Image (tube, rainbow, N blue to C red; front, side):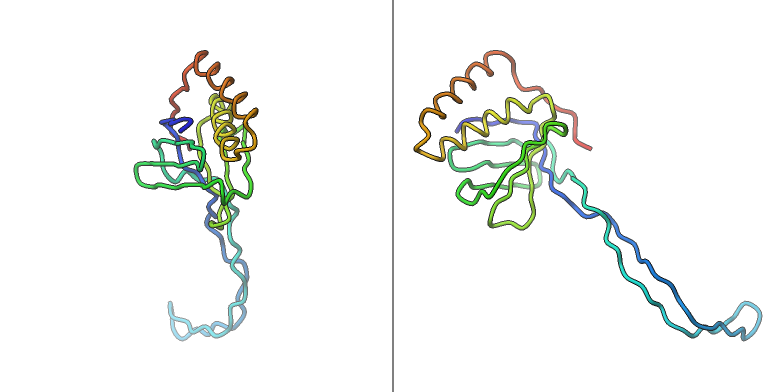
Amino acid sequence: MFAAIPGMSLVEPRRTRGQYQGGTSGVAIRIMKGVSYRTGATKGTYQPGPEVITTIDQGGTAYFTNKRVMYLGTSRTLEWKFANLLGFYHDDQMGATFLQVSNRQKTSGIYYGPDNLAAVALRFGAALAAFNPTETEAIEDLTDQLSGLEAERPIKQLPPAT
């Protein structure tokens, strides 16, 4: 295992509430005061809301090994196996890493805050390099960088993601 980092959050895109757009047509016939009968039709379509990054679980621990990245949280547990990895993205402004794997439709990831981007990206890189056994030089280089980084400063605990 390359690292176990507490204080992480699990994030994934979730669709926000949509709305119905359309109109009605027809005739309203007044039967008596306060009572009317309406005939006609309703036409329109449902417009789904946009997808936004949503925190699914907070306060978990991310584990980086030579075979996968795991998130063990208070209510959710998720793993991303390197054998199924299609791609990944480090969002440096948000402070999150998103991973796409072949056995899951949605992209999900871990949130750690912008202050911890270098530390998490380095651990992720070392774990991914160890998955590929032909990259021994890269593993040694990343391991040296990781040792230097750990000696410089510990990873900060984060406030909950919004």
